[in-house]
Image (tube, rainbow, N blue to C red; front, side, top):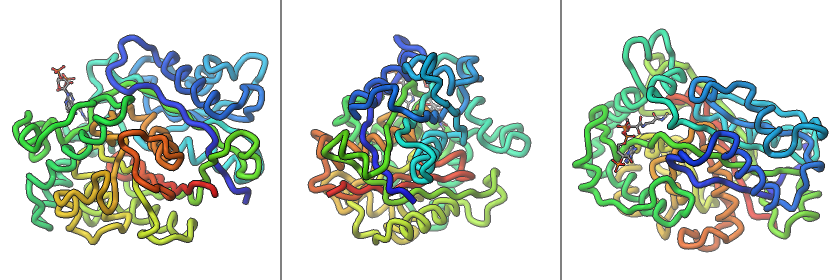
Length: 388
Ligand code: COA
């Protein structure tokens, strides 16, 4: 297979973007990725765009063609554009399709984008619930905060995680988000902000939840061999892994372990031929605080049941043993669902280029991403290295 590298990345500010439509967001992120890569539209062979539910959020389908058109890749260029959907893992999966297109030799230079415009509808919770098992979960009233609350209860009962330890995930992610000018929330918070916030689904409070956000992100990939024509700092894709699981949470043997994360993580480490100690930072899918703890355990960075203590001791903050979600994660950077997986890659690119400013991880050489659809029915994971 052809070795693949990321040569450009761009994103919009995430948040309540009343000032911008879905096509505006895509245009901003796409053009900024193309400029960053020093690539002209005519050089692009294919576009993959992750979007979970533009049809229900804004009544717009055929998102691949729309994005290609407005990014300047439609019309006379006739560039093939494909929408990719895997709930909140749509962006990560769009990136994986772009990597596969280049790795197989089918395409030379490919753009992977992700977008969601969520704040225009009043029933975002119900739209999101479509990513669970509609017949057996959502129709019975289980929303995503409710499902992740069940995971949190199970985890707390099994491993004795304290409410205070769980809160530290949000405190740390707001600390990182306050150092990311593109983040939805750029304010630091304290443990008491989390503990005293409104109860959403016990034990999860408002500050345990990722917000409903608008935003887009885009990255450009090509062969590692070609990458040097465009940039001095290509970021090599060492591994691209995907795994699946049951759509419904209640069909899993263990709520607190996301089997697809375990499987995708194992595949990713085997492909990359590296060990956990080689990874300098990770961007994981903290749609709710409990999900971040499960993610770093299920990827194998810390033993099961210990991520709360590890977090409370400051080891997942910049400067700690394993910085997690330096972008601010979904909690503080925001979670425009289709865009999140691409934003994770964007953050890895900033870190590995040494361009992450006040949230830079010193000497970062290898970064990893983990992007989840639903409660873990789809997980996509990538590992990246700064090319020498
Ligand atoms: N964290 C911190 N503050 C938040 C927040 C969050 N997750 N969500 C909203 N807020 C703030 C808003 O900024 C607003 O503040 P302001 O009054 O100072 O302007 C206030 O809370 C009310 O905002 P609103 O949009 O009315 O909140 P809401 O009650 O409608 O929604 C949640 C809150 C938690 C229910 C919603 O963000 C949610 O559903 N999150 C989970 C999304 C999800 O499931 N994603 C998929 C995961 S798999």
